[in-house]
Length: 198
Ligand code: ZN
Image (cartoon, rainbow, N blue to C red):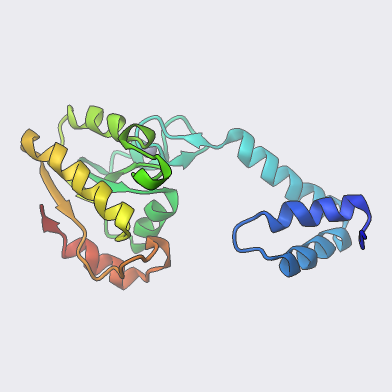
């Protein structure tokens, strides 16, 4: 038996499919939205659809941005000779919050995961190696310390080494299995400064 009318259950259903939102939270949010003034609810809906419509991947580093080339890649204050490889845009933001890194990034948008059939061609590795044909001094690999993150780091470092470009890995100190974005800024700074050459 349906407790709610169809439109309400559809809204709850959509909300509960979001990460970290259980069915109770979904109901709470749905009722919050239904009690909002109509213009607030419209602006929420517009923010979702316009972000989805306009946000794309930076042509250079593949972070999420609403511009062709993101502000970091187009800044002349950033050192383009140092590239930090991260798994996703949230990791990039975590390092940007530390505010001590002046290089640029390369966002893989995933990690290699053979169990799920995700290989080197499914993340932005080809594009990374294209960038390395330019003038690059160092690649800092800052993938998470999960099994997939470590395997991806090993794979990348093996391919970079023969090119003579310095390749380093952020220090352990970042908890194993930890998502980079959940780690505090001091820990992240230590991990960056204590990076080891591979
Ligand atoms: Zn960029």
